[in-house]
Length: 204
Image 1: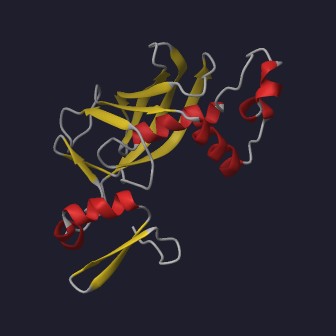
Image 2 (image 1 turned 135 degrees about the vertical axis):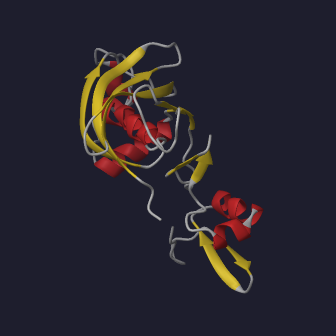
Image 3 (image 1 turned 180 degrees about the horizontal axis):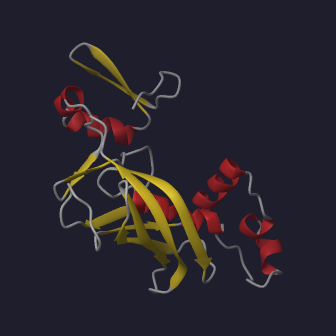
């Protein structure tokens, strides 16, 4: 990934060339094995369980994932991915800034206390965004085609959520239908739905 000098938070030298990074964490990753990052086509992508997935160690992005894939070269019914992350107050405020969804229910304690929820809650679309993060854990390049969602209950700020995506049908043209759900740390379903995706090979 190209980072301009103006937006770089960290810089390092390797074999007479300067490399710029979005964060000190990314620089540390490079410094641990610079030859890998210079000599291979996509060294920044994550390799796990014999599969290359298009996730980046980007800035301060957090979260943990696991995959259950029978054959990384040929996705099939039953293959699944999970992604878990705590939704922090900082996440909520950054999401409000990025989308301009500044609904007081998500940002103002005094206002939220007077609503049916009694306190601030997480934006529903921020919650559903964890499905996208989970889908990016599949081997290949996942492209959304459609998504159906049903919100089962609100999410409190500070809750840890797990998005679970499972292939339930193989369609034509490298398309797949999946179940998509999100659970909180009490194993309660907060969001349920289905998605259709197209999964291309990782570019050479």
